[in-house]
Image 1 (cartoon, rainbow, N blue to C red):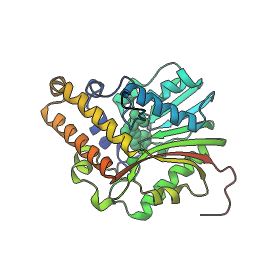
Image 2 (tube, rainbow, N blue to C red):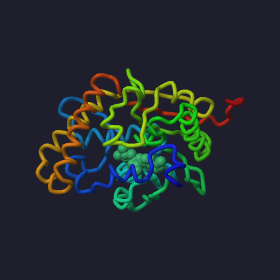
Image 3 (cartoon, rainbow, N blue to C red):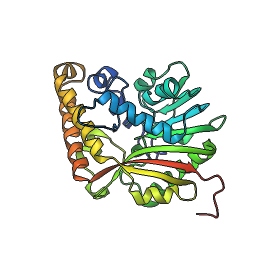
Length: 288
Ligand SMILES: C[S@@+](CC[C@H](N)C(=O)[O-])C[C@H]1O[C@@H](n2cnc3c(N)ncnc32)[C@H](O)[C@@H]1O
């Protein structure tokens, strides 16, 4: 797929962020290399436990326990895929990613990955369960005309609907606009941290989901994100000298600024963090 033809972030834009080096991200993420909002329990909780809890929550919602085939759209370094096999008895856990260095990290017994845009994915058999954890933000570029943004979101849910076996579920985690809109999207984050990306509103998600998936649960965990980001920032500061050696001072400064800004946005509620358990509607009625 060409850059121009991609309604979301191009492979180049994804690589500019995720391919800075696995050893850089290893310094401040947890051991599973999960790069998304964790699910915290109590003041003494650890990042490792909170990330495992989040993954378990999403896998449980997707109905992954004992599943033959699981898909993770935007699998990152593959922590959820590996846990699906080791803790949920999934036979084959498959991930899609646009990042080469992430995908080199993923393979394990029962776990496979393709460097493939979900727009191009054509599975040879249905999946029993699908998860997608904070990849949705890269599916539509900032500035896309509203009808094109709506179309790509609808296409994502249509695709998941087609890929899932009857009765299956999709567990989706995404950052979304809270008390803000595209006009408030931070310029620095839009250009220097996550280029070619935008956030959905709850209304856009609702429209795109309608008559394809029923909403079983919806959680807004924005406070959990503020805590996750604070923990990442503490870890990055602790390992700062080594981080500068790996990626240089300017990149470290950029990441510190992005983490600080993001903490503020989730604390203020300009950004929300949604976890949606969506059950496939096997016989959608009418047109939409
Ligand atoms: C923030 S990371 C999240 C990774 C992982 N889900 C986690 O929880 O750590 C976003 C991921 O989405 C992937 N991604 C973004 N756009 C994609 C697309 N169009 N098709 C497939 N993967 C995509 C990126 O390569 C990256 O792995």
